[in-house]
Length: 245
Image 1 (cartoon, rainbow, N blue to C red):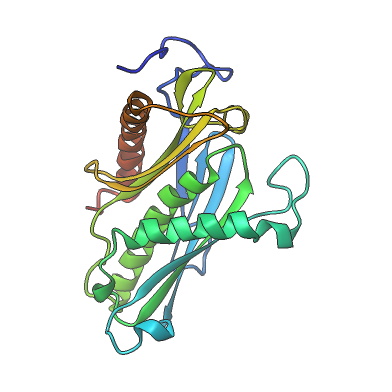
Image 2: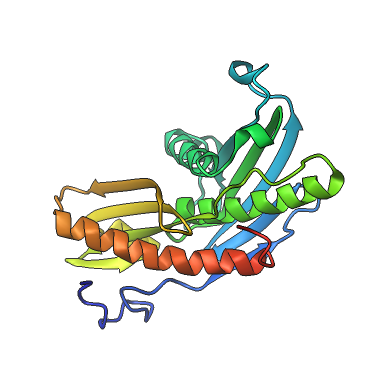
C-alpha cells in the first residue's frame, strides 16, 4: 500500500496526485504535428517533422525511422543556459530516451522509407521535462500521422499503442508522484517510468542518489506511476478526439 498520501506537499497536492496537465495541439503551423504540453510550471514544445529517406543502416529495408532531439531554451530555468550546454550529454541521453519510447510503440514498416524527427524544446523547466516530452511527443506524432493519412502519404497510423511517462521520487522517506524541480532536487531516489495505456512497461529508470532502495519501494513507485500514466493517457485520448488506440 502507498504510504503518506494524506500529507500535503508544498504546492498542496497529495503524494499520489499529478500536477495539472494541459496539452495544446497545433503549436506550430508548419510541423506535421505539434503540441505544447504543460505539467505544472513545466512547458515543452513537441514538434514532428516527416522527411523522405532513412539512415544508411535502414536503406532498402522498406521501413522508416523515428528519432528525437531535446534541448532546453536559454531562459527555461532560473539562470540562462547556453545553447551549447543545452544540447550536451544530458540532452543526448534524454533525446535517446524519447526516441526509444516512441519507437517502442511504432510499427516502422508502416512508415515506408520516411524519417520522423520529434523536436522537444523545453520552454520552461520545473521538473519532469523528459517525461512531459515523451507524453507530448506521442500526441504530436499521432497528429502528424492523421495529417499524413489525410494527404494520402500514409495508409494507416504506425502507432500501435498510446504511451506516456511520469516521474516518482522518494523524498524524505515518502514516495511522491510527478516531482517538481524542488522535490526532484531533494529526492533520495528518482524513478522515470514510461508505460503504455494498457499498463505495459516501455522503460524504467531508477536511480539512488547516495541512497539505496528496496523491492517494496520499487513496487510502490511503479504502482504510483501507473496511476499517473492512466490519467495522462485519458488526457491524450481527449486531445486526440478519441481517434487514437
